[in-house]
Image (cartoon, rainbow, N blue to C red; front, side, top):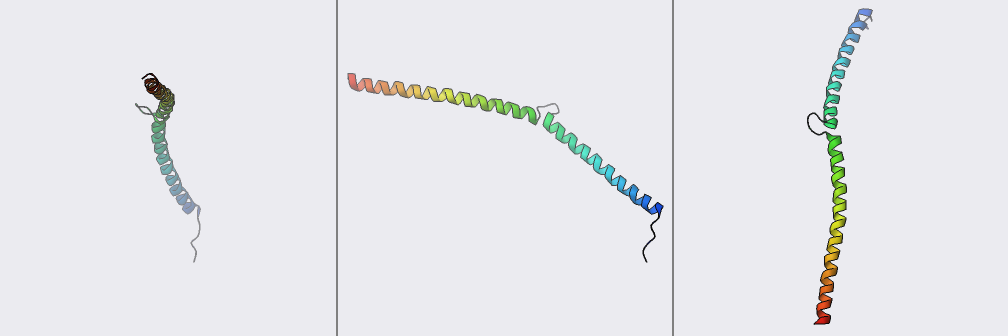
Length: 90
């Protein structure tokens, strides 16, 4: 025979459910705090700052790469000119 549903039993079940919800909310709050510390930093640079620094470094590397490429081509032109001059003059 099925148990009879009473307000007291419903209240017990609701209290149990509310305790579970509160525990989950506390766990979520702790997790969100950890995520916030990782993103924003907690006494050291966070992920946002580190990403900005990496992007800046990448742009500097790209600019540096362009300068190095120009320098290598300049050296090659000078060496080729020296070789040609050596053969022509002597």
